[in-house]
Amino acid sequence: MAPPTTAPAAQFSPYQKFVVGLLALLQFAVILDFMLMSPLGVFIMPALSISTEQFGKAVSAYAFSAGISGFVAAGFADRFDRKKILMFFYTGFLLGTLGCGLAPTYELLLAARIVTGIFGGVIGSVVLAIATDLFEISLRGRVMGLIQTAFAASQVLGLPMGLYFAKHWDWHMPFLVLAGIGVLGLGVIAMKLKPVDGHLGKPQEHSPFMHLWHTLTEPRHLLPYLTVTLLATGGFMLLPFSSAFLVHNIGIDASHLPTIYFCTGICTIVFGPMIGKSADRFGKFRVFLFGSALSILMVMVYTRLQQTPIVVVILINVAMFVGIFSRMIPFQALSSQIPEATRRGAYNAISSSIQQVSGGIASLVAGHIVSQGADGRIEHFDVVGDVVVGTTLAAIWLVWKIQHQLQARSGA
Figure 1 (cartoon, rainbow, N blue to C red):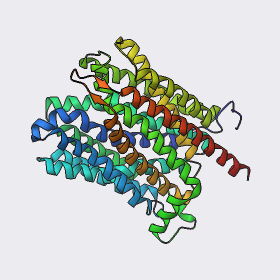
Figure 2 (figure 1 turned 45 degrees about the horizontal axis):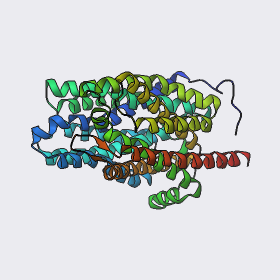
Figure 3 (figure 1 turned 180 degrees about the vertical axis):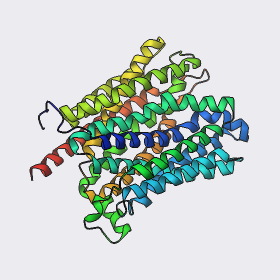
Figure 4 (figure 1 turned 90 degrees about the vertical axis):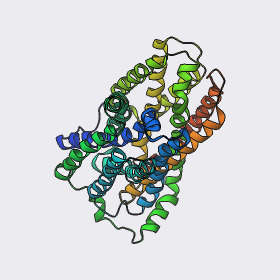
């Protein structure tokens, strides 16, 4: 294990600061579009006269179409300037979002969600590829930390604003606003982002299919793919049932849920960059190990809570999310060293697809584990917590193996 350094090897240039901010805003837009659907269900279902099953299909349509498109796009991800790929998929994403904002029927909304997923599901992988191309390893922890704060910002800023627009106008309005702001972002990308094409000067495979196949089956990529699968389990198994668990098991009034999510989001925004800096300074694996240990402890406590004051719930929730982010941020920075420059786009696209699909499967598995009693209580939520702990322990071993493989390559 490499000894900790006293200071990062380099600092952000002004252009790099602009790129980090731009990438974080893109992540914010994509994550917000995905997260908006669930809270807007209370408005969409009566407006379109659809059942909970139909609405569930509209929500899951994004995830599965994103997972499929990631695999398809992986074969072409390294054959073009990453700026052009980003603009292409971001344009499609905005058209899909606009379609959601204009959809008058359930069928058109479902089609719009599929289009949005096809394009939006690839953007995250392009963002990570650009971050890896433009930032050396000593800065990537901070870069990943700043990009990951988009998830928290979407909770703190995006969801309340989306619900406000839906309540005061119509459920279409949040999507229309997001599409309108996105057009401005597209203009900034076109005018300010420099080409990201350094990988094009290196030998490329002629066949997109073989490029996909070789990236997918590359032996040193297999451990990271498996790790992504396990890391996606935690959030996707716990989050779908957290609201009901907080209300019916812990005794939190439903009106106080926004307060819990707001406080959690604010703290995550603060801690995200700090986690990234710590990963750069003390080592990616050490911070990952800390985050995993904290996650295990907090998940065990959280999934077994009984009647608990809201202040204690907030503290536990914050600590649990800090643990989750302390796993994801250093792992992304660590795994960014694995693929060659000519395979970064394909590698990230495949990883994103695996994350989407495994997350969807994890949600289905959790749905079969838990049940809801006649009084509304969520039963067997502690079993879900045990599964998450088991996958976290397995992920620790896998990341340890990845760390040793990278050290062996570096020494060679």
